Length: 230
Image (cartoon, rainbow, N blue to C red; front, side, top):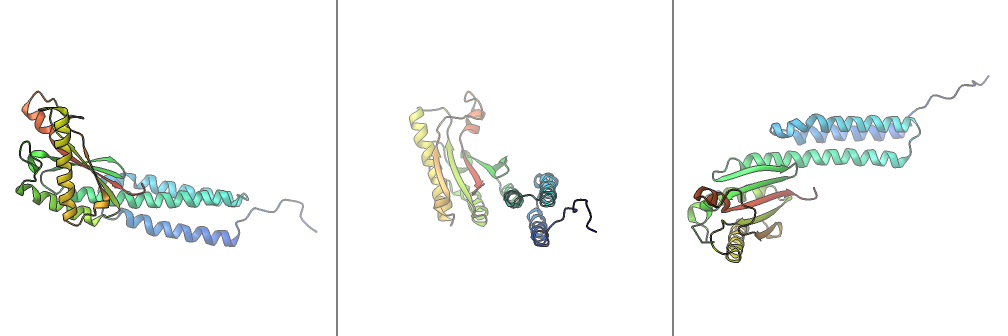
């Protein structure tokens, strides 16, 4: 005699194999991405892994409830994005740590996929000059070595000045200084296609131009390092 109750939902063997393979792949990728990173990345580890686990559970439930392939595709995309984001974050964490070891530069994390490296122009140039000082090239060589190790990033080099002189002159001076830095990095095997230069003159001051100390802070070159496709 046939039973009258509904059959219990089940996950097809093919789907279960697919989900298991996907889960194992994520388990291999994510821990490697977080290996040897600083506390900045580790703080995100729980959120990333939690998102992955939630996505897998959701996919299992969706299949158990006769979820459609579109739903499964969304889950796969979420998992892939989470894994890729973890790898990018770990790469930027490691690059940040290496850049912080260089004397004469300041490094800040402006986004998960972006770093801002600031070089005071007194380290790089003489007053009113765009020619690199000989004792500044050591820091740039170290920076180029780091940038060369992480080719999947773009570099936006921005030059700034204080307010002494006309705005038009300062714009040209800042552009020449940005180009000097970019050209030197390119000569040290950092691909030119990765680099963009901008001369922003006396705009965006970091401090008041009414004091010598403030003007010194405003004379600077900033390098924005951003992960590609992020």
